[in-house]
Length: 471
Image (spheres, helix red, strand yellow):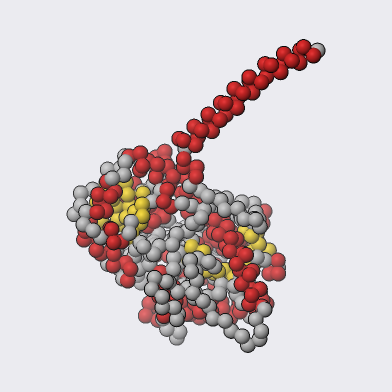
């Protein structure tokens, strides 16, 4: 028996050595030939939790789903005189509890409020894939979500009577803003935290415009900081050159979220040969930082392989946008009225390599995603040099562009809000935008809790002004 055991051992050792050698070679092969595995980053925390506890503030339906129903049944957008995107869906019943969000691209691009709210309104038995756990007692919550369709409210006012938007009289949107703030500020949850653990979705830069000072301490889900920086600059005593004063918004407390893409997803297996170098579709004339567009337009319009088109991917321009993005190697993303736009996320879904010319841009899910793995970042000063941008893009090899596209295909799902369920009610994709947003909010919890505790220990009558943050 002893002899037999020795014989078995002598045969097994070489086999084990061969097995581990092959395993090591296979791991090396994966590392060398599949480098895209590194572009999605997890950021484990010593206090990591599989969920975030969310309490939904109690607001009347007139501030969310009834407002949506009103849009479909009685609203006419003066900005779209031939509004093919405003046809009430055949499935919409007059008593529908959860109507769909508008297809009008001016509004649809900001639909995060609809999908985030829909996930929280979904019955618990259908929320197994959700990172956010809804709790019914605010004392058990990490954060309080305010279910106001602020963007829809603002856009309906802008579409009905833009002239009244900045006024308080005759402004339905202002009335709704005031109703929201009066409701949440009267609660124990708000008074306990000063609103610092409340979450508002403000994807439209004009959303809740009249009450921005009141919601400044809260966690704001925004697509960028463009309009907010101007408000901060007016109300701040920070004068240091090169420092942006953050008295209302900051990457420290707030979360950058994606626009809703307007073009359908192109799977990597469906990608075809691309014959154009660079594509852009949008408005040539913009204000403020968007002046870069007009200058780039004049530089690029006559360049071979470059397509510059005026327009927006609405019902009539959608097919044109799909064709342009799917047949071009690169898609131009210059700053507009704000540093970013839904164009970036349309490019990602179209596997068109984004060329970002926007020095002050903030991007969703950074720390989870490395945009440099699938995008080209160009300084405004370089982009405005004659012939510089075209020559730079032509310098990328076919292998580099293929790798960019492979990396982009990996991150396409995390910028998708749509759960595929009517009214946004139903299980959400575990790797989609809604879960990634709540994961980013979850990362803010230690800072939120610290800020609340620091506020509590101040003696009565002591007021500490909001300071400039270095980010």
